[in-house]
Amino acid sequence: MGDGELLANELMENRAVLTALGDEVRQHLIVTMLLNAKESGLRVGEIAASANLSRPAVSHHLQILKEIGVVDVRHEGTRNYYFFNRKTLIYDQLMHVLLLAKQYMGQEMTV
Image (cartoon, rainbow, N blue to C red; front, side):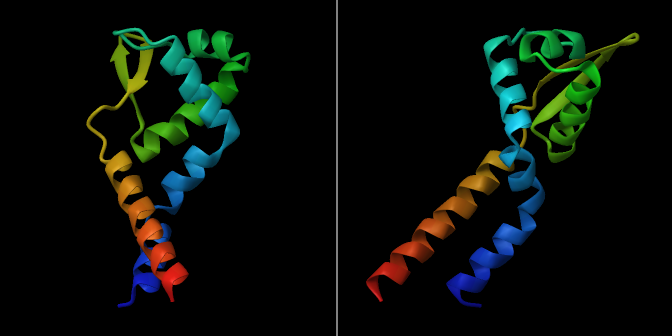
């Protein structure tokens, strides 16, 4: 398999992650969570208030971030606390894709 095919396959395999992280609202939520991080996590209402978004919108976007593994949730009775999943391998996967792209582009430039 050539480098172009390898890069194409890696991009396809990471499409959900790239799509999820490419959304402006989710990027805004990530920044909001970073700036307001608490050791115990944040509740949807806290995130919504800080991000100036509705609770349903925040819940929807948090679910997508949870599905790709960036965010996790801790349940405490009826309360849910959202926090960044530090054990996720998503960032390593994205770095791999970016390094492949950089390598491929370097080869294309020298041809």
